[in-house]
Image 1: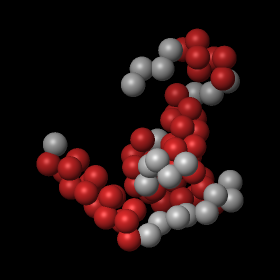
Image 2: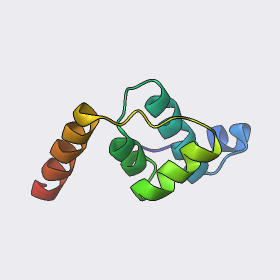
Image 3: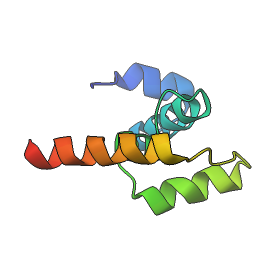
Image 4: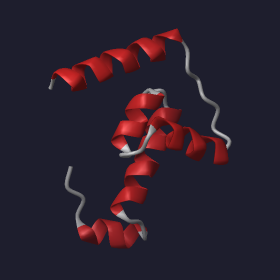
Length: 79
């Protein structure tokens, strides 16, 4: 995804910061699992957990999310 510099400047964010913001939002909306959000933000899963903890966003990580993350990782490994 290419993010125009004008958009980043207007939002007063770096590309990395914008990716994190989008990942956090999608995680909160249950649209991405923790692993997917971390991948989108180009972070390790532990770092993503730290960001969520600082924002007091609870981890809703159950069996379904684990299975989705495992499938996502397997797919990436095959690519």
